[in-house]
Length: 351
Length: 223
Image (tube, rainbow over all chains, first blue to last red; front, side, top):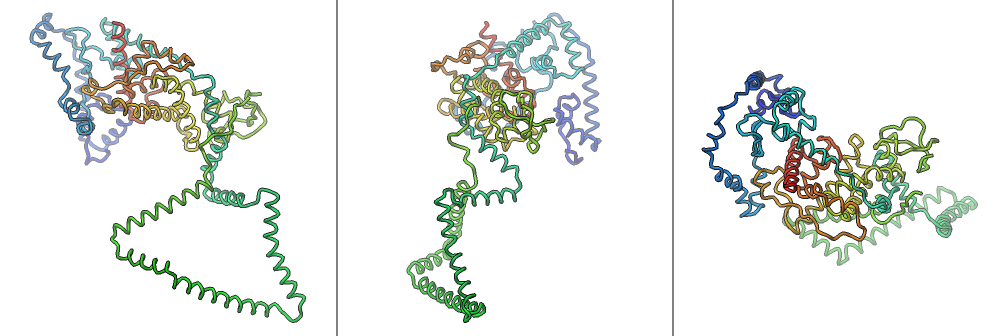
């Protein structure tokens, strides 16, 4: 907006001069006006014109003005026209909202010039200036600018019709603002709290406020907690499982230390040789099993098929794989890390 | 000692989550705390803080919802869902906004969703979000449920029988929410816009048109 290459339309400039723009819109437009002499001059022109219009005196029409106008107005035709919905609304009703609802929503709203009444009513035949319902409501809500408010006050002092309308609106405001606050049943809070997992909320909030490192370490601690035994029998079992290899290692070390014919370098050389031989045997065995297995042949055929498949099929397969992996990850995450926020709970009413 | 009997920190209660009050030595009077501080305590797992938020907002939220759906039992269910949803999402609440606006937004969204689903079985509640004259003339109204009151004879249902309540019930949902938030809850235009997630100008339009319609409806009844 602040670029001189882009100029707001006259309607917006006129609204700025009339002070009808919202504060944030006015700020944006003012930023443009500071750098654009052309628009600034147009706003000044509008301000001048609007000021002159405001100063125009109210000139009452001739006494028979209303009668002459009404003599030329076909009231029945106007009423029928008002009752007949617009063409778009009629087509929408006939052909359905899915078709014309889109058009209607795309159509910009009709903008009425400031001061034009939209409700079609008049307070006093022949009088050119009366307060609009919107103006009256803004006055009662105290949202009018001080200058406008004083003009409304001046008008109300002389116009009985607008005073009556203002009184009517004032009564309406009092009526609606006197509406009571309704209460739910007494056990409403207890019923809500029975479904709120307070600790889960607290832990979820705390997790969101921690750094990623803290979250990772706490997640690791949680996994460790899950792996640790929770009963005495579990601890005995885990201790036994842990102690058995430890005792074996201790026995080997003791045998080496106590036997003068065996030294640690000899033992290391022997173990390395046995290790290499074992790994080699294992590799050969695995290769033999894998290479001569019918499953392997099937997999080779599958890969060959994939290589000749169309990009679409490959993409679909990839998407499926991603979905499967994602689902699996989600399941693992939900079961290991995320606290459950659903289900029944422990929260009890406080005494 | 506070009704909750919980300890309160010494000194001034900090305004942010990070510096929320911790256990101290003084009794904690939740009623004197700002919403944000109560929320911060709730985030620390204090059940009394949740109950304080409930006691502050159960009536306003229920009032809004019951005037939207015009059924006390259903309104209680929706208000309950709104609180549960809000409490479970406290971690995503931004303390720079008013808690009440955030809560009303959740309740209003739940209510509007419910009305939309309900209208799928009957007739669309929407002409458009920016109504014109033609739409206003032909727009359907939310049906007022007849009867079906539970044995617990709510005061709410009796209140909803008054002329002005019936007239409010005949407004389209957007107008109804805007008018209720503005005049019954006393929210500013900006807050109403935030709660309804629509531009400020749209809120002004909703409120002006809602009031005009409401006044006309009341005049019809009086005539």
